[in-house]
Image (cartoon, rainbow, N blue to C red; front, side, top):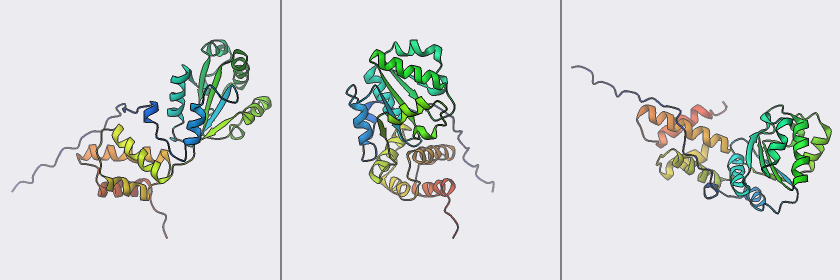
Length: 232
């Protein structure tokens, strides 16, 4: 008797996700409500600029995108900033500079830009994972100014927000899972937004490759792969 043919494996492709960055899609909880409130209070900021700090995947880009829509701001990565762009960037009246701690950038250009933004009555939102002291800045006046800048911090998520983020990430991938899956994930995974993205992405890929639903056994398998427990 011949062996039944095995089910062919499906291939997982890197297709763009429907990751919504609208204000209605930003999940507010105790870990981010202060940052959300300060960003949303624009234009009644205490200074022309605001630093938004938080760990990887915490929602800084999402919150910055919400503000960019409110303020009609342009967005540029810090590494792409140059002095010859300052006049053009300031002409928009509002600007987001992302990932200020991701590597070296043109520090004199940022100092010039901050002066120009203030003189023009504009506003500037800067995002980073850490405080300016850890960016490796060489220009003392820039470091001093950034240290004194008003700041909003997104903290690691509490249990309720982590569960809500997991649900949203599955919905963004058009995956329907039951509460047992969310419970199993929240119980064992690393408590961070970045980890939530990583584990949901891995579950999506494995489920697609195997032609299976996301179930608790699959969750335990992926968690053991991504977050192995320390021996002993």
